[in-house]
Length: 81
Image (tube, rainbow, N blue to C red; front, top):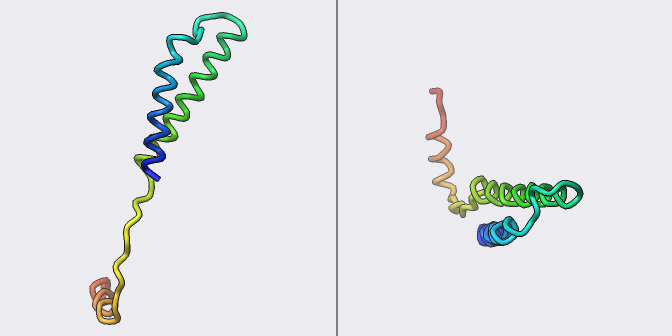
């Protein structure tokens, strides 16, 4: 999962790197609107991938508990006598 997010993030950065010098950001009319919209969507893609990388679920393997460890674990979690 993280490899896919990292790959998408790198590809999005590459697209932005190559596109920013070529798109007409200051042009009036439809070309300028398209350039600004494209750049905003590209930044949303980068932000979404960063959020996925930073706040993604960490999949941990849970250890198999035996009956003895379950009973001991319950004793440790009690807060009253």
